[in-house]
Length: 481
Image (cartoon, rainbow, N blue to C red; front, top):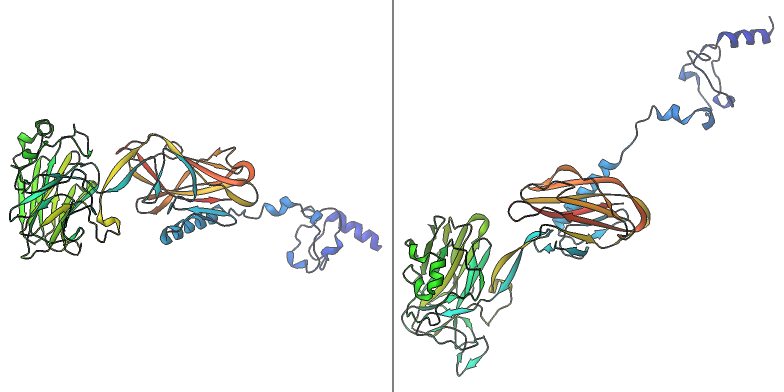
């Protein structure tokens, strides 16, 4: 039999692995193999050469390969970047493929509509703002002298002309001309100063602080309320429940239900103690004396979230006596008003002031109060971030907080992305991720198609926001591109 005949028989009957023991793959330059043509060709028989791309279809390879999705990796990197920026209190920054902002400041925000950045490093349409101020004082002692427009630095002879002098061995004092809102946080500071020393702190014996708490809200909280009698000449101040009506107009007494006031709690001395407001109308007073002339004022601090109030004495060096003589009042009403008064007994000239001239170098030397900013809707937009090349797909990870209620992604919190400087925003569909930290949630969007460009922006919008029932706070964003 000729070799040609043998080869023809082999081809018609199919190849076996032994028929072609060392076939060089480089010799196969055209056509394709069917399983029937090489029924049992072991891969070990192909020992050299390479197959040309045209010989093996791409689908023959891809069907056996597991596709790689880098979104998990990208999201992890975004989360890591947010955590590092939060821990380091970093301002907004960007890399070649990422922009990160945790609102340490407002440099990464181009504009907002009813959604301001808060100093506590978040953006929201419902938030609080803190104001530092020095409230005015109302004279209540007939031993006091008060100029028409008192201010520190104004000298009258050898005596500073700021309110309210007590130069006698009796209690004299003042009422802070502020109606405090129990729904908000606030801090009230009043100092005892030496009128002969440019307003420097001066200690006194038997300093007293009094607080009147009511659930009445018909009179608006704020500075210089129209609630005091035109002439306050009570010669003593103890802040007790028998004394507040001396200062208040009859209309204010009615609004505050003063006639129902029967509960008063008083403490004296330099030991810490607790008092209970019982959630209703009540008055408190605290007298501090540790045997010396070194009580130079008081700080009254209210924390609405815990319904507590503290009364703490200030020493002659402007330090709080938080380890002795601090009074903690619990069960403060969550809604209502508060009035505050101060007094002292001293045989030397002493003045009361809501600030002092010497050494006023920091915010801690002032009173403060918070107010609520409430907008049902709002939004904020980032500055433009320049990408190194044209971008047509973007992603993001955001961190947010349900400060109150539960916010629904894509309804109450809406994210939009743009690559053409905000000319066209594409609305993302955010999906929840595991929590970033206790009380801080995360959400993501990946591979969102956008109108191509190199000027990238994000826009976050709020809806259905309401004080106490639905309050979203955006804590950070990592933009992917």
